[in-house]
Amino acid sequence: MGRYPGLDPDSDPKHSELVETLQHFFVTTIRSSWETSEYSFTVKDLLNGKQRRSFLREQALQQGLELEGTGSVAVGTLFAKRYSVWVMAIISAFSLYDTLLSIEDNVVSLKLTGTGSMRYESQLEQVTVAYADITKRRSQLSMLKGRLQLHLETIFKGVAADTGASEKVMWALIAHNVQQLYAQMIYDEGIWKTAERLTRIQEDRSVWLAPQGDTESPFASKLKCFEHPKWQGQPLLIRRYCCLAYQVGSGSHAHGYCNSCPKLDSESRLRNLLQK
Image (cartoon, rainbow, N blue to C red):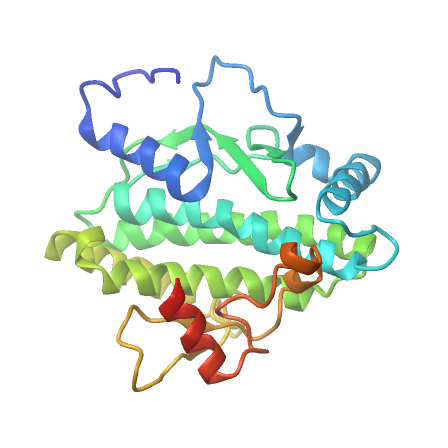
């Protein structure tokens, strides 16, 4: 792991915690600007039709699916779901550590893990964002939101064309994980730790979900929260659409429905959560 100008992971606990959190929860590595990525693809490659199809074909193969064949739509929806992990890394860096990650096409790198999942790599764009001035923080986050929206729109358009997946469904999967992340951050005092941080998290969430003029935010898909008299755990938001992960694998290796899947009935969902 490289070091950043003015930031030494060994002497700056906040930076060290940021790096560890992104790696552990969002499989995202931070590299220095002078380091060369060892990852196979950049986001820029995903904008090239031939390279994107090569990436998706390998991802499909690792998941036991076929691009332009059986399970092709699942390749697209699962790409969006996996890519939402990177989106959550961006959000966590900003809301928990006041840090902007670069989302530039030629900076963000990614690689397949062998099971169809992805790992990510980026650089720090701005280490400390202004938060004392709420208006300035909101403005900064609004710009990030707009840039990320364009980033995702461009990628999803190509993935939809190659797989037959619905862009609407892909966006809904992103929106679910964004809202689920904020629900978890707000619920867990071990994450926000101080009232000041909780306030920032809540304020940031309102920016992501705020309409853009007369248009609803693509991150603000309306979701239901799981309710059951026997469930007292953290909030669980139910996806609007199935991600089709159940098409991956078979027999003892079958994926099954995710706990947040709309295909699960209430009792099955509860049983899964209690066994987790």
